[in-house]
Amino acid sequence: MEPREVKDTLYEQFARVAKAASHPRRLEILDLLRQGERSVEAISIETGLGVTTTSAQLQLLRHARLVSTRREGTRVFYRLADDTVSTFLVAVQQLARARLTEIDQIVRTYFASSDSLNPISRDELRRRLDVGDVVLLDVRPQAEFASGHIPGAVSIPLDEIAARLAELPSGIEIVAYCRGPYCVLAPQSIEILKRLGRRARRLEDGFPEWQLAGLPVALGASA
View 1 (cartoon, rainbow, N blue to C red):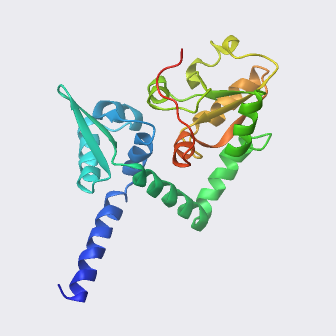
View 2 (view 1 turned 90 degrees about the horizontal axis):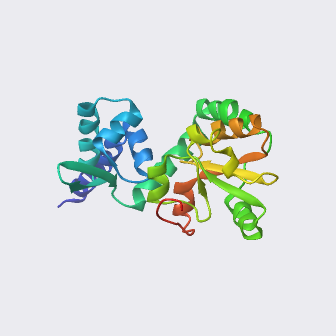
View 3 (view 1 turned 90 degrees about the vertical axis):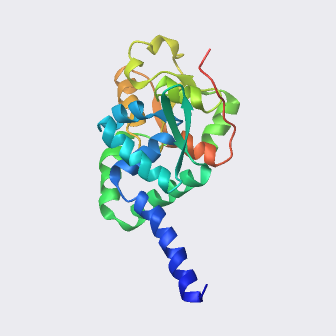
């Protein structure tokens, strides 16, 4: 191959990945799959897309080798191809926030306004978990918790917090986490907990970032 042909071929392949990720719903799907594998039907429910549309979006992602599949009977389950895809998604989000003031405005308006105290960092959370002066609350759906969670976390999905509040010890601060820095589940859980008289704050990012940092991960449902 001539040098020009090599460059053209390379950039065509780079564009292939960029094109596959260049749709809001496909980015949302990738973000969902960072939490664990899902069926087409489950992704359809989460995104509000029809099953046929969801399947078509997933095929585009699969063609670019951003997702892989496994079959269980007649059902097909999708997952991220590997951790490099998760790293790519984080980089896209960070770049977009750095370059687009619209994103920073949304973050300041929605997320920052929900925090009467600063979000807790991963390092601080690790120190406090070692000391035992904090309760860690995973507010994602139970299936996501079972696929992987921060060790020591208690699983109470967002819509069950009020009914299961007694399961959380009183008199100790609660740290809630969910799918990442732009996930709305943790801020909503903080509002509920504070309304019910509990001290609470959120982790600054979420489980995928914890996992990408190479920190310990636990599997399985809570006892």
